[in-house]
Image (tube, rainbow, N blue to C red; front, side):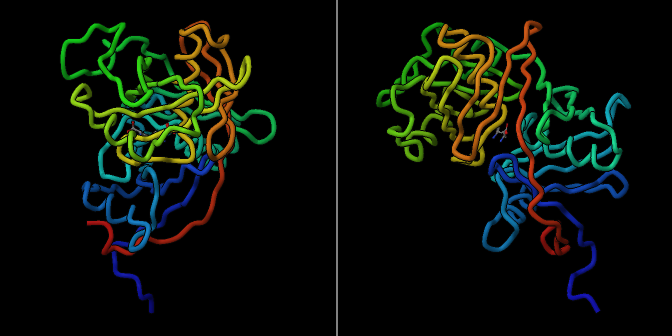
Length: 282
Ligand SMILES: N[C@@H](CCC[C@H](N)C(=O)O)C(=O)O
């Protein structure tokens, strides 16, 4: 007899460069999740633990293979997650046996395909290039955002379906991100909060990036953050239109294409599968 309470659900634990996810499949069995249930499953001691949780459901437009709903560990629902998109794309490709997949999100349709070396490439859609594209809490001079905190000044705002503030620094390792990240995330300027990247150019096409993610804190990698970083660095004239972005968990290849879409290429990994007890879900 199983010790699991009824209504348990199977899940995959996956990650992209250490940015980790619980992936649930709701394509044939619908699943309605509360923010509280997301936080419960995300507890690294009493749940499973993740940076983001993803529910794969049926496509709403019939233009994609599946719809992906994304939550941060704090229970907030978000529109975009680059690393999770690669993971879900891989899962769909494993099922279909095809080298491509289309994933629908709140931010739009994302095309994914296999790349050399077992990597997955995703067209993350267009970059929004102006602070005016990111919901701000007060009128600002968009060239000179009034954010100035211990050496972190003059960020570039980039929307990748989610908001990013990219700060260029001389030494990314020296930034006290665990202290400054939450202050910047919750700055009144950002009514929807913000993902915070600190970025140090380390070569003509190489950037070191650390991230404080909205709703998740410091993570080992952020795919949309890496996309935003390359767009921001190109706009500042620090690089061309493509670069390797070196994150705590490894490296992503990013290209800001001529049509303003951003192509992200990187690895995915399946850690394990399991069954969530029903008591975690309501
Ligand atoms: N880890 C992600 C981004 C997840 C969402 C983000 N924290 C937000 O709140 O917008 C990625 O790989 O892009």
